[in-house]
Length: 371
Image 1 (cartoon, helix red, strand yellow):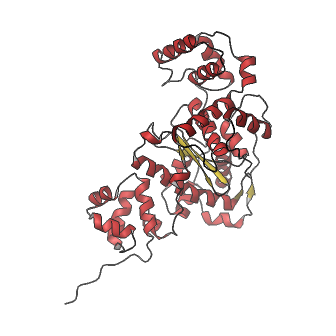
Image 2 (cartoon, rainbow, N blue to C red; image 1 turned 180 degrees about the vertical axis):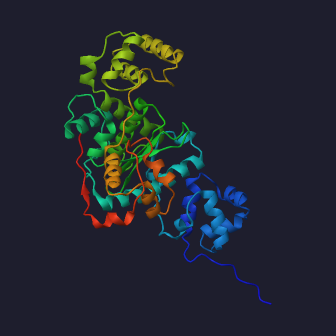
């Protein structure tokens, strides 16, 4: 009596298993233990030396929360860990890093899907390596026609100049934001669980990386320091600070003044100190008061959260065509929650299901963005 061979999946992409596993922040051992498999089996599947049976892949897909069809798609494009700027790499666990990079890989596919349907803004982000961060921020403001004005919406500004902005819903302090260049297209990922002021600073910080570190340069703390200096100057230009900031301010005065630049009170205090508008004693005193009031964790008089103009328009226009998030997810072979995690907090529009095939009947739509 012959033993029946296991039923193999018609098509199986090993790299897709790696992506799905890393998106959940799991090691091979953790996945194997949870699914009742051996580490050798998972290693073999990801290394393309063996393929899982249909039953096994069903079990894996349920745990990793992806449809089984996800594993039949072409090899994914992973963001390069070396080319990604993470705000707190030293505090980040490998699983957290892998989950964020996994989100980036799926965002690439979502972006390509959107890009096929809409004419997205062209990229016009300056490349300013080895430039002083303060000078670089001034040059970007000049090229983008911002002058010394307060920036109303950082996400809108980035998107208007071709930066693709997506969200992260990871609920941990170690994954604030990250950015990268994918060819000639810049991407920024923001943790939308942070305060509006923190998210604005994160967006400007990641712009600093895109502008200053596109071709390498400093790494680690030095790169983060430069990006912080850029963000501070970009959001709070020196001329603007000198014209509008209070002199020898009290903490209540700063809480009121910060609304002009839409930054955190902590960021404003640091900027005033770096511009020598506060003595060291006054600076330290204000920092103590901020900590005593827990303003470093709970921002006072917080601004409304910023949203993505591009994603909001895309979802709205798709909805008008009868296409919803569920349709996009089905076309990408993921579940709707995965798509929502990339646009969470960045769109206001409610979505309804429809038929994704209807999109192909339209020429790419042009998005009119307001700076």
